[in-house]
Amino acid sequence: MPNIKFSYLYRDGSNYKKFGCVIFANPDNVDLQEFESFIKSKLIYETWFYADHWNLPELFIDYIDFRVDPTWHEFENIEYTDLPATSKPDLSELMELIGCYGG
Image (cartoon, rainbow, N blue to C red; front, top):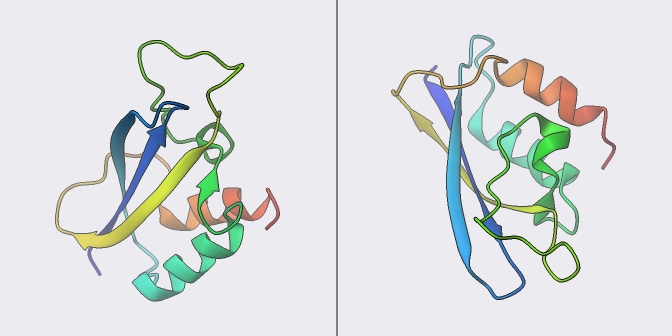
């Protein structure tokens, strides 16, 4: 199966956004819908997550004021891709890590 692209964003208190993505190798052939269901079950209110808990790059804007700006990131979508992996842990390892943070 192809790799999986995980797209997400950071939205500050003024609604400025910074987008990013990570591409995971998928050697265990995890199905896209299975992975999406898993991800959504681990999100805060089916939307947010802490990027550092999932070992994903934080996308904070240049200036952040933690008194008014959130520290979570927002899940955007996932999709298959033929692009090479950009993350050291593969998809199964990410799922194992995410599973440690409840949901």
